[in-house]
Image (cartoon, rainbow, N blue to C red; front, side):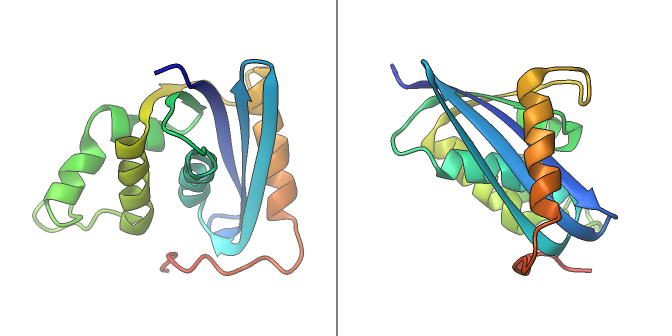
Length: 155
């Protein structure tokens, strides 16, 4: 696959739950694109996931993606197979506990089936320029006005 893309993502929340935002930087060859968005009431984990989802959804063709995130929740759930296990168990983490954010996990898994995605954890706020830029985009988006509702968020 010749369509190789590097993605950096981050999510932010003003309170958890609270207004939230996400940001992503997509790099292909010498092209760079930034995307962001926000919601009036959500959680930090949902915004970390939305950053990855929005970035992957923006790809126009099947791609080989290296996706960098400072969210252990996102990276570990995919790379260690937890999300697939939760899906196979009817979105339950075990016999009694429901998995959180099944709507977004379904999207993540679907997008990972469309693209070849390798998730890489990076330390947040460690001076990695693209990760820092994603944080700026996410924080700015969370402070936006007239933010839409996060339809999948449940208190």
